[in-house]
Each structure stands twice: as C-alpha cells, then as structure tokens.
Amino acid sequence: MHRLHNEGMPKSITIRDVPDSTARRLATRAASTGRSLQEYLRGHLIEWAERPDPQELVARIRERKASTGSSLSAADILELRDEGRQ
Image (cartoon, rainbow, N blue to C red; front, top):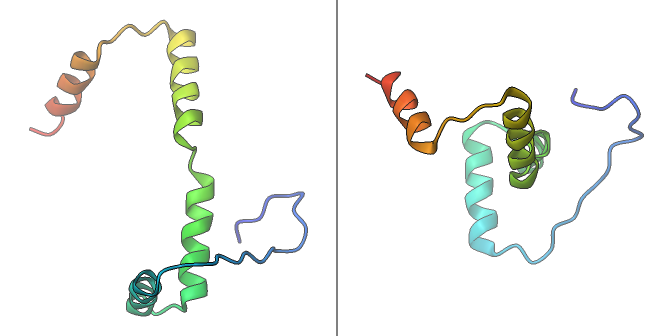
C-alpha cells in the first residue's frame, strides 16, 4: 500500500461536473483492466501524486545543475539522447 508513515485514514475525494463522455471513457478503460472505476482512478491518482509537478521538476533540475556544475546545452543533451537510440 502507498501510504506515508504519518498518514491517517484514507480520504474520499469527490469530483463534480465530469462530462458523461469522459466518465464513460474512463469506465471503459477501467473495465479493460479488470478494475472498477474507483480502483482505476485511485491507482492513477497515487501514481500522479508521486510524480513531481513541472515546477518541482524544474527546481530539482536547476539544483542538480548548480551542484554538479553541468554546462551541457540543450543541443548537446538531445545529441547524447539520440546516440542511444541508434
């Protein structure tokens, strides 16, 4: 289970005004994985919450860059990334 050490009881979340087409699409995806809509959404919410948001990710990158003295340009990074794909 993905609980933090100091968490209390699990919380319920209500999301209002979800379009019918969105709810149907999500229910179909949940069913295709053999899970209820609640189980499907809960799993995705946990995964989503564990990933850093864009601002946090940028701050981590800047912090790492400052601590390592990295000076690679975006072009260098893309070139190194593409080398691994060949």
